[in-house]
Image (cartoon, rainbow, N blue to C red):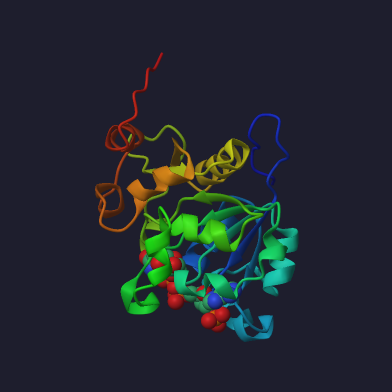
Length: 223
Ligand SMILES: NC(=O)c1ccc[n+]([C@@H]2O[C@H](COP(=O)([O-])OP(=O)(O)OC[C@H]3O[C@@H](n4cnc5c(N)ncnc54)[C@H](OP(=O)(O)O)[C@@H]3O)[C@@H](O)[C@H]2O)c1
């Protein structure tokens, strides 16, 4: 099965997940359930993550990060923020890339480079200048990915915001978010991702589309 595509765009078929930890394998499970082909990579030899991948995301294929990035229609970054500089920027040139990362002091330390940028996603964008970057999935716990998904139209469907400077990439990522069981709220440019970071109300809570739009200060007219 190949899930839907945003209007006028190439259908999304393959999801690449960089990071085989808590978030990476949870996103992989949702993507598999939605019918995508899923590739998972960590920083090393795929053989090292074959077992964990087969247990945590059965059906996903463990590959190298370069193979995953080359084949993914969307590439999900589910690695510690402090490791982003270990990625090869060339492999993500032109790719639709989800930034699911947060600054987590216990893991990442203080990261002084963040003082020079508007948000953690701007740091990611500076490291990966060719990526079509969209921030989302950072404001849902990995365990909630397994429980909070709902079919389209469910009254209690949880919403997740997408923020990025490339509107085509935002639309594609919104399609992915919808396919894995969540309403996608288009928050606009990458800087809007500040409202999704740790310490914000969006990050701390669980919200429907209307609630999330209200929190993001969006004026929305319906029907
Ligand atoms: N935990 C949550 O509920 C949650 C929710 C939303 C967002 N986040 C964010 O999501 C990110 C991942 O969190 P997590 O809890 O999943 O971390 P985790 O369980 O520690 O997993 C991190 C994974 O990234 C891999 N990795 C590190 N460098 C890599 C590289 N250069 N290329 C490919 N893979 C690499 C690690 O494997 P190797 O070291 O073996 O390469 C590991 O598989 C963090 O930025 C976190 O802040 C977490």
